[in-house]
Image 1: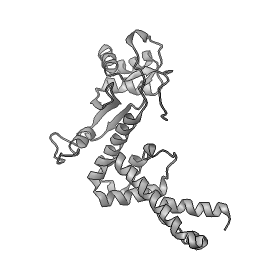
Image 2 (image 1 turned 90 degrees about the horizontal axis):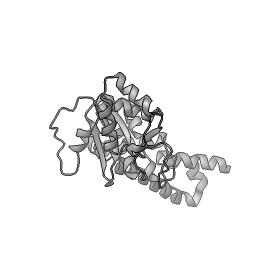
Image 3 (image 1 turned 90 degrees about the vertical axis):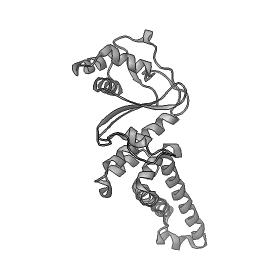
Image 4 (image 1 turned 30 degrees about the vertical axis):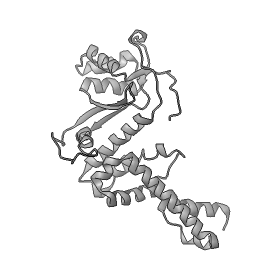
Length: 250
């Protein structure tokens, strides 16, 4: 077996959690060692998913989560050596799972958890000062901040499934939500509901619009521009597009 073929079989084993028979036969006395490595890689990646998606795990149950995690690894192996960045495609994978078609809230909660996770590991950056703003200013969301638009109240589902909570809703779940997720100045990950104008404004910023363009988009929907800008600045959601955050973050 040529090296390239050996590597291809080994990569397949890592994705599927079991060493192919062709590779086992070729490895000879080293087969058991390769199997240990395959098992270790698979278990480490599944553990990373469980760490990044604890509420999703609770909603699915450990057995179902483990099965879905194995199938996910087979089609979406890590593209980065850093385990902290593994799992970004998991919510989309869950959304496409036929077995979960009747429970779309699970994939939406997973997307919310991933957004919270990215906020938690993002580098620090200084929010823009009001005095630095002008209509042509190019802004962006703070590193790690993200927007969520879901058909269910994912923030409430997340909160009632924290350790010590029993998962009982105290308000309707089947209602749409618009949220912004960010890490505040005290390094706490926050999530806040957004009015339509705020969501349009921040979405335009994400899309590369200037401050004037983003405010115009919000105004077209009848938003109170002063209030929208005040809320975004008050939460520390915005920084200048050329801000260089500290640390290493994609």
